[in-house]
Amino acid sequence: MSSSRKSITGYCVFIGDTLVSWKSKKQAVVARSSAEAEYRSMASTCCELMWLKHLLADFKIDHDDPIDLYSDSQSAIHISKNPVFHEQTEHIEMDCHFIREKVLASTIKPLHISTDLQVVDIFTKALLPKQFYKLLGKMSVHDIHTSS
Image (cartoon, rainbow, N blue to C red; front, side, top):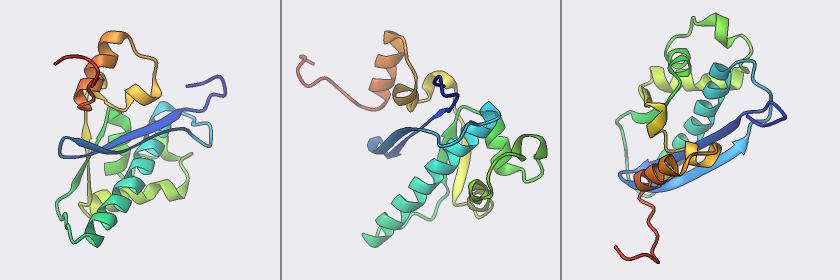
């Protein structure tokens, strides 16, 4: 979170082991809770996933299985699966709730990932070198100027 109190949203999208899309951006509004900020981030990621799914369909590559959407926020995952989780959802805009439709339609499958394995943190947080290089490795990013 920055001095403006706005959270940084980020995502990394992989097809198999290949990173195909990524983004980090300051959220447009101040979230009233970390769960709200994480849920907004999930909604942004869901938009990207739907766009990529349609793009692949244009290339005649269909993917009918649910798309795994990893989050390190148990609360955000719970909100996406439970439409009656009112105490944390009262301030989330209606357009963010479309993620629930995708979950109910089995288009998206929210899954928990531990914070130390959350690849997108490399774009959204200051990390210690050990964690930074661990996440670079998970993204299959290698220094081409070093010997292997």
